Image 1 (tube, helix red, strand yellow):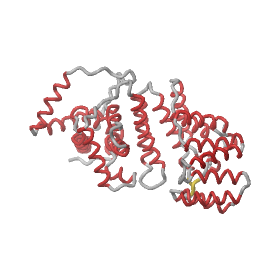
Image 2: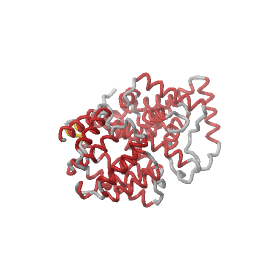
Image 3: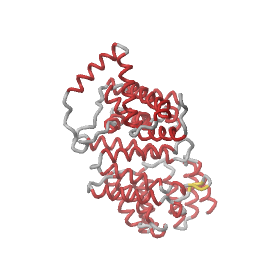
Image 4: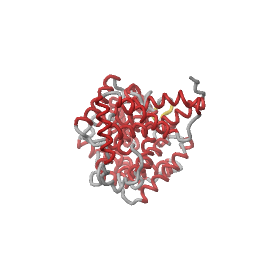
Length: 409
């Protein structure tokens, strides 16, 4: 066997990233067997490493890999009686006319859309949706997913097994939902992708690659659903957030927006994020991800902290609270209100949240109140709130930041 050189390995790696989800989705669509699809996809990529050094990289790597994987699946099905029965069943299904396509997804020649919606079906537990999406659409191994979510590998393996079993036993259809169910189901898909992104945005080791996977999947979803604005809103939000990653911490200490070096922000990501947001807004159907992206764009396009359009951000948070009510959204609005209307107005919103008790145990509530009290010159009260936030802070970067605030007082 000819050993693959660096160029061939790079071609296989690129194909793995770009084509894995499509190859697996196509095989699941053909066989309805998730494990068989993943095994044969792996076989196809192994065959590429063995064959492409000798024959050259094909002009359409994805088509080559899909054909190879499909042939492996057919061979394996033919070798046992149950598989031969399944092949006959699939032959009958292939002759049956397809049902009517959703207006939002007609003419989309990509099985990944069916796979995304099946992985994110509401009948599956949320953790299972996340794991299954990463496994089948990005090709991350069970061990990689377990490390990213700080879970034991056997636990994650069982989660994947149970999810696939649930799909089979509950008869979860492998399809894009009909038009009347699409908005609800699309929200479930977007929630999974956003969680994956946020897990990757965490600074802990083993997670950062998840941001790239989430952005990749969001790009896929945008291409597959060009008439839906919220996938574009989510992609824009991810790009604008990722643009600031390099300045989020300094030597392991959290850095707030006010003190971040904006010259180090990723201008290409910001420009793309703003353009994608404009495309979403042009579709004239608002949604929470578009609003969050608009808030991120206000921060990303301000030349400095003092120039930030805080009244606009406060108004956007009010709209976000209308679309997706949450005490965390209201806490963020409080900061914007304090910056636009004065500390007293912001503290009033924070005090209402504290009295309601919905954010008890959430470190950012006392941290936010402490910061506003500090700005108002109420040092002793601010110190007590910073100390409370320090006791609740979940990460070392945030704890170091809070210690710094206490020392500064």
